[in-house]
Image 1 (cartoon, one colour):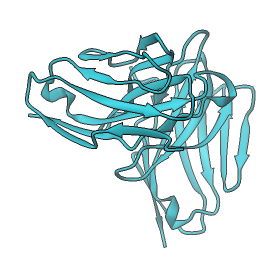
Image 2 (cartoon, rainbow over the protein chains, first blue to last red; image 1 turned 120 degrees about the vertical axis):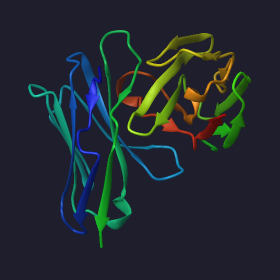
Image 3 (cartoon, chains in turn cyan, yellow; image 1 turned 180 degrees about the vertical axis):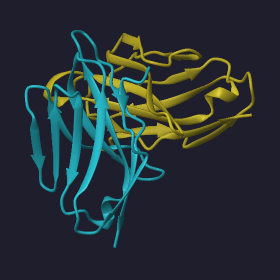
Image 4 (cartoon, rainbow over the protein chains, first blue to last red; image 1 turned 90 degrees about the vertical axis):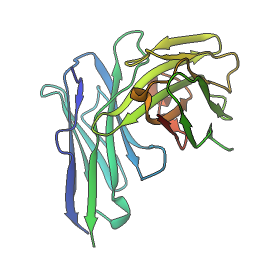
Length: 113
Length: 115
């Protein structure tokens, strides 16, 4: 049973446009969500996070939105750049006493120049 | 800071062999973890540790052992390698496993093939 789902394996976007990556979760105990970016042959790198007490967090070109009622979060990248081409993973954690991070399967973003 | 380092980068094992994947961090992080990445499966948590002497199981712990004798090191042991353990393994660390400072820093990975 996959608790964190990224239903789009891939996404292509034109340079300068908005990229929207989606993530759904099933566990209502999750209270902290993170996005990671991964280039080939490298480890993932942290991008942005959001606590369940917020519905939006912004960092430069990256914004994460959280809709708790729908158990859905999204990552917006504006404007998209060719260097953003990578695999993006969402992750969730939470519940009292848990230190487990559950990752989605990833979305491969390709930004076309 | 070197960050999170992993050795080796690549390894080929035969079924039944044992080996240890090394992970070290120099950021004085309390929380460390091991993941495996398989095609279409994302990153799955194997084991984690919230401090020296404390470890716990993740989603897919079978076939793996860990120990945490120091803050810096968190080795992952494969007891008897199986082809199903062919994967890319990532070690990660963070200041804390909870709260605002739990963004994890990942190592570069170890690509393991079991024949």
